Length: 143
Image 1 (cartoon, helix red, strand yellow):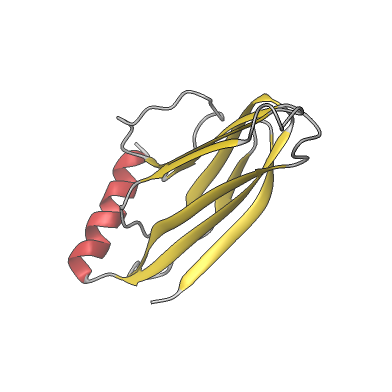
Image 2 (cartoon, rainbow, N blue to C red; image 1 turned 120 degrees about the horizontal axis):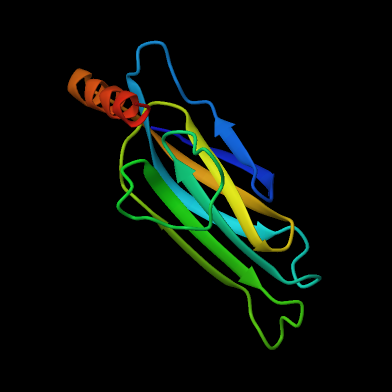
């Protein structure tokens, strides 16, 4: 199927909603790529933690919990204004899970004020069983 992408600038503690829901839930998505770029690379020190979840978090957080069943991806971006001595580091990890509901991208800056993200999703056709499981997982996560 096709690949769709989303990009944006996340302020510190901001949570953005990516609308993916369909009427019948037969279209699913899987994360292919998550990339982060500072708002002003090299101009200021920056540390950011970006997380992608299946349910809206109550607040953006720099705490990463791989035990969370709602966590789809996480990216950590750091850079120093003296970048020739301290190169930019970027770690992204994402799960190979299919989902068919809205997702949420959140940012917690430990230094700096904002981060750019690029999220690439692969669109996949779900059979009835997969669509039901994906929808039920989403509903359970919202309890």
